[in-house]
Amino acid sequence: MGRVTFIQVFALCSLLIFSNLATAQLKQNYYANICPNVETIVRNAVTAKVRQTFVTIPGTLRLFFHDCFVEGCDASVMIASSGSNTAEKDHPDNLSLAGDGFDTVIKAKAAVDAVASCKNKVSCADILTMATRDVVRMAGGPSYAVELGRLDGLSSRAASVGGKLPKPNMNLDQLNAMFAANGLTQADMIALSGAHTLGFSHCDQFANRIYNFSKQNPVDPTLDPTYATQLQQQCPKNVDPRIAVNMDPNTPRTFDNVYYKNLQQGQGLFTSDQVLFTDSRSKPTVNSWASNLQAFNNAFVSAMTKLGRVGVKMGQNGNIRLDCSAFN
Image (cartoon, rainbow, N blue to C red; front, side, top):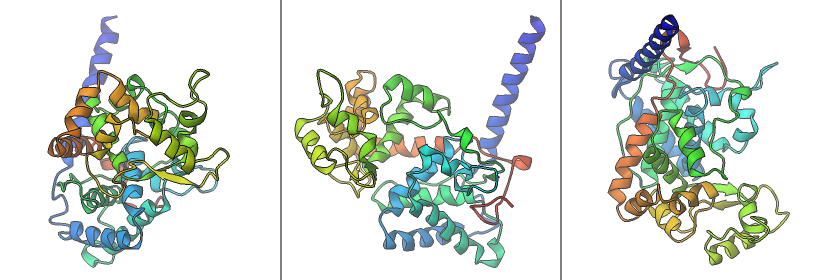
């Protein structure tokens, strides 16, 4: 028994040491002596892509989240399926990731590699991290320094995705458990949910809330009735599955705290959004950020920084991909 306890303690210490090592080797200005202008190069590429289509902004932000929650922030979500390997991006939970998010990283990588001193020196995982920071800022959100120094992952399997990403029908306990598995607190979860101030969702993700919520209530009673009617008009029964609606019905192209104000009005699109207001454990945080944009911005930056440390690959566990969509 004593030996088992020792092994468990040793394993736990090793886990803590290695997770801390990953964090310790991530640092701001990591590329200062390698590719000093990398952040400007990436920002310029992202700016050009945003000019082409606004979808770049929510698409890139969501791509970062989906990458980090499965096998860590290692650009494994970028890998294309090949031969016998079905990659992460082809799992059903990732099929709705916007192609413009992937394209943003690919274009930024090409811009970085076009500079001789930077060629093949900057990981796709770091480029995605920088691009995500940039799209948040371009949408009116906070600007923040990013920690860099990640390597790209060496595996990408669709089988790794199941049960790792939040579902639109989750309750607070389910959300908290999923985020805690990635070292994130309830406050981090509520802050990262605030990314739903941008972007859109397909009708099938919330159709149950407006048509068949329960026998007593076909419409979810936590939905504002006017908003529910609006959603029914946008998403009639048997609607084209490609039809999408804005996550934030009021300021869908601005990164702000209106998401939390919407929750106060019963205008959360997903069950997993509205529950943040209806559950008494998370409601005070929603109320606080609905009335204080700066407090939300600070919490969001803190949560994004913590998210960026999840499952970081170092040393033999990763490399710098020549092509973000394929292993070297």
